[in-house]
Structures are given as structure tokens and as C-alpha cells.
Length: 219
Image (cartoon, rainbow, N blue to C red; front, side):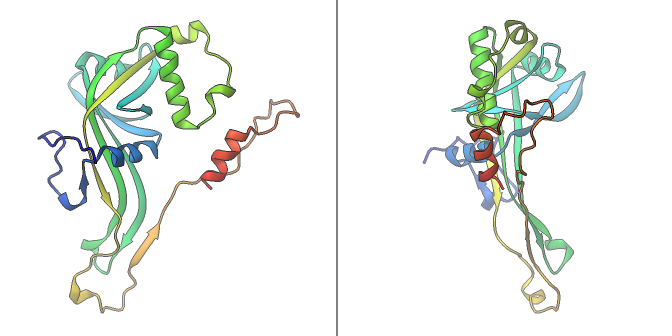
């Protein structure tokens, strides 16, 4: 089992029993999501925004327009952090103090650089697209050169990370367990609904196999 080394930056202090630094488990949390919350500083103000991302090995890819202030701020700083979180259940206890949630959360830290050449951009965008839905990249038209020119692509190298996971039931006080109050879990999950074809499609264009595979795997 490979782990990220612990430091002041990534060490989890509160709830250490839920902490993990295992690289494979952290990657699993990253791969289960598509939106991460990216933190940056703009004109002295701390800002956190959701961004779609792609992951390959220890690289995270973000993209937007050439004028995107978040990506430009990250490049100026030379480093970034991003958090991905999945809400798995509401934990309803017998007392307000012990209500909680089950979740999987990973925070990654690393250095960033701008991808300059067209091939590098294309490879990063393929990673982004395949992270969103496997098989999609080969089904869409190739990128036009002017589209690549207008796109700013940032590569983050993950150098440190940590995760917290809560996946247990109610943790009430022993003296409360006999109270006539319902307690338990309300499991939650994000699901895919049946694909809806664009109304401008010719009638003979069927829903692609890779789209149906995604739908069936995420119902």
C-alpha cells in the first residue's frame, strides 16, 4: 500500500480515525467524481469554486478560456489545492449533537503549470472527457486549431493528499439508545436518468453504446 507522506499541509487532526493517506483509495474518490472545489486567491480575497476535472495517474487537468481568472491566479501562484466530496448518507441520531453524514472526501495539493502545445492540450482534454464518460472522446469530432488556441489548460501534479471517510452508523450516547426515538441512516446517491436526445438530431441517430453503458452503470 502506497501512501502520501504526512505533513502540516495534509495531516488530518480532527477525526484522525477517519483519515487515510492511501494513494489508491484517494484516486478512487477522485475518479468517482467529476467536480472538484478549487481554492485560489484573487486580489487578496480567498475564493473557492467548483470545477470539472480529469485525472490521469498523479495529474489533474482543468480547462477554461484564456482569460479565466481562476486558472491565471493558479498559474501565478504555481500551486493549488482541490477537494472532492461524495455525500453517501444522512445519519439521524437520537440527539441533535450526534446527527452526522456518511461521506468520502479527498483533498489534493500540488504544483501547476500551463500546457502550451496543441498535442499536450488535446491529450489533456481527452483525459478530461474520458473522466466524464469513458468512450466519449472517440465519438466526437476532432478539436479545431482555433478551439485549442482559445482554451487554457492547466496541469496539476499531485504532490500531497489526504482523505476522510465516514461509513458507519449512528453513534449515540449509550443512555440514549433505549429512547423511543427513531434513529438510522438515509442512504443517498447520485444517479443517471435515461439519456435525452437533442431535438436537432436526425431521426436515424441512436443513443451511442457508451452513453447507454454509462446510464446503465449509474442508475
